[in-house]
Image 1 (tube, one colour):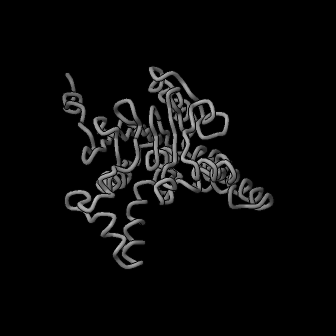
Image 2 (cartoon, one colour):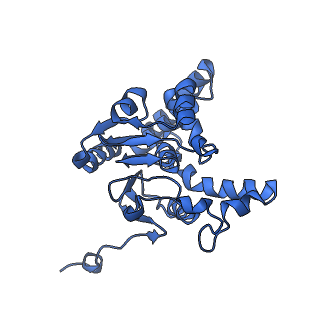
Image 3 (cartoon, one colour):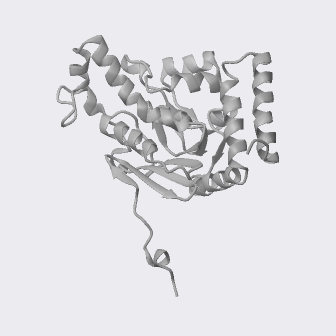
Amino acid sequence: MASPEQDVAPEGPALDKDGVRLTVDDAIATVTLTNPARRNAQSPALWRALTEAGRQLPGSVRVVVLRAEGKSFSAGLDRQAFTPEGFDGEPSFIDLARGSDAELDATIAEYQEGFTWWRRSDIVSIAAVQGHAIGAGFQLALACDLRVVADDVQFAMRETSLGLVPDLTGTHPLVGLVGYARALEICATGRFVLAEEAVSTGLANVAVPVGELDDAVRDLAGAILAAPRDAVIETKALLRGAQSRDYEAQRVAERAAQARRLRDLAGVGE
């Protein structure tokens, strides 16, 4: 006889609002951009939904996959933001510019929160990117730890061309991945970076045909889940910290992390 738990239908999305859907399947969570008719253009409401998705992740989640419906990952910021009307119920960017320095800083900081949690030490995030990933879309892909791209991907950082700067946390990972000179050239020109260059420069881990994108991400997630969780967490922290430590400090960090792993495996201190 089936238990009551077995009779219960699978739960629906943990979150489904403002162009963002969060689903959880045991150790894997999937965040999907769900407005393909507008090429998943972004808005403050979408950024708040991304923040909420991060806050709702259960502790069982080890891998978070970021994907998008339709032919484009995200065409970037919805141009409606630059109109005097802005979005319904939201201050327009023009109104924001007329506010105080503190108000403007706080608003941008709130927007950034949707881009910051993807690099938490307890998860590994993978962006599955197809088609256009422009501006805020490019920065959202950069927010993740890893990027698997379709062979039709087109990255571009268009903020500078619009008289702005990339401010959704994309500059730090971009420089870390491709170096200062190439990052400056990509941002200042606003040109497209296609799949082959993305892989060769380190922007993407691998490029696959569009029809194989989901399978490639699934395989990568499975390979990550095959390793012990605590070892992945410690390794991720070591690698992230290496950017700010010198060689000797990194040696010290490696020793401390390994000591924790050895004691844990040996059951010492329990």
